Image (cartoon, rainbow, N blue to C red; front, side, top):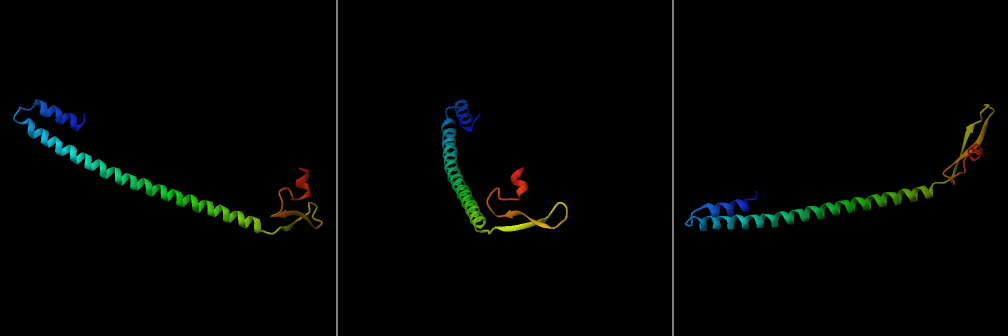
Length: 111
């Protein structure tokens, strides 16, 4: 039961002489509650706005990091790698690192 209903019930149960005092007390409590609600609403709005700003900053930082990583990937030169042949007879060119997709060793293309 809310305090508002409890105060109304108390005022109804009081003698006629005491009712105005209870009603005045209830009016002060209601005004205090309204002021508290307004203060709380302002603080919650500030917290919400701050949290939104923090989330937006994190999103921007993430996007900038991904863009930077994409630029680095585009700038990497192709490097030929060599691996020993299966029979140990010597090295053979087997793969390209940083090249086009599917530009690996001939064995990879046949697979």
